[in-house]
Length: 357
Ligand code: NAD
Image (cartoon, rainbow, N blue to C red; front, side):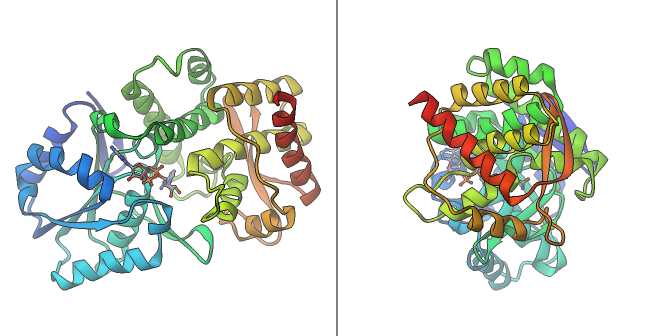
């Protein structure tokens, strides 16, 4: 088992995680307990959680539909409504049992209900275990823009029980791996090399622990995203635009899938800006292509992409700013790029596919 301290809270990773949560609940004095889940985590994870934590037999379960479209004002209102109807007071606790959608939505709702009640994350997807459940960013999508509305709010604790991954569909497992490759690429060459050689054979718990500890190190230096934390946004400026544009379409992508494409495209921006060599660009592209086998993107209007980037939280004024690698294992932030450079980078991504076809 691994215990990572993160500011005011701790992250427990391993087989004992749910036992530790049970011990925490037994000694805490919450007035009421709520568990937020979606239909899949309700079916596959909730029974194990409740068996492991007796205190949760009394908890009220709030169920949302699975999927990104639940990360909305409407579903947040549903969570808040349930809390209000049950007269939840300031001492209520919300446990977010699910993937990143549940932890982002639940964390956001908890952080605004009565100006903030405690919440605990029990992530159940690889993406949420390795990334979304830690770091204190909460949010919902709004007006067609990913994470447009949100708060910084730290969970009371995070309990990561990797056994939950046994029922996670393969597509979602691979989706989570994308964020793990990202953290390696921006901050740890050795980890990147390990992933290159043995990501498929390393047990998920080891990958999660490494990813969480790297993320935690960066977030601790800059909890509110003013500086170094921005390197975690590598791949996300383009990734979020792609994700938002394809949301609800036949080609809809999962978050990690969009970020993966964003990483390749933004690496080309880094190359155009002479931050990385051609060799580094080729290595990043070939490692990501062979590990994830992403498909060609449907035709996206560059205008629509840049409009969305302008709406991105990372943009100030009219300038599109990116977090771009300076070598494998290190990343810069607040690098400006023009529409023309962005277009060239998209063409590069599509050409990789053409080369392989
Ligand atoms: P998700 O929450 O939609 O979960 C993926 C799917 O897997 C869902 O269908 C879910 O029901 C199912 N699932 C989850 N755990 C399962 C299990 N153990 N068994 C069976 N099915 C299971 O999506 P996600 O990929 O976990 O998270 C994506 C979200 O995370 C995005 O909205 C993204 O913006 C957000 N995110 C947030 C942060 C942050 O720092 N706050 C970081 C990265 C991503």
